[in-house]
Length: 149
Image (tube, rainbow, N blue to C red; front, side, top):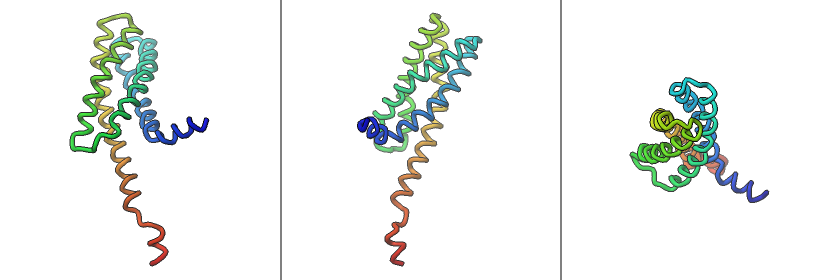
């Protein structure tokens, strides 16, 4: 149990980030699946199953990018790499649910494309949050300095 708690603490930010993206992902997936299929049951199934698989993939993708330096186009390149991964996973899950190659192909191209807009916005929000935390930690006056004044 101690190892699990340590793992959770070590990855707290990544897990919170993954969970917040999971919620966004479900909403987008449901809307797109319904728009393509016109069937609420298929949309509901896809919106719960596909993001669940993607959440694991997202976590692994985010961990792989964790040590990449912050550069000017980092978010854009990270988004493009996740888009490619997302396409493959979306196609597989959509085909497994619909057994319709055309619907699976349509969903696998449309849903990740819409999703990437939300992914990019999600990344920007988390970058600002992370930068704010780093700035607050490094630039906050120390309590020792406050007591000596």
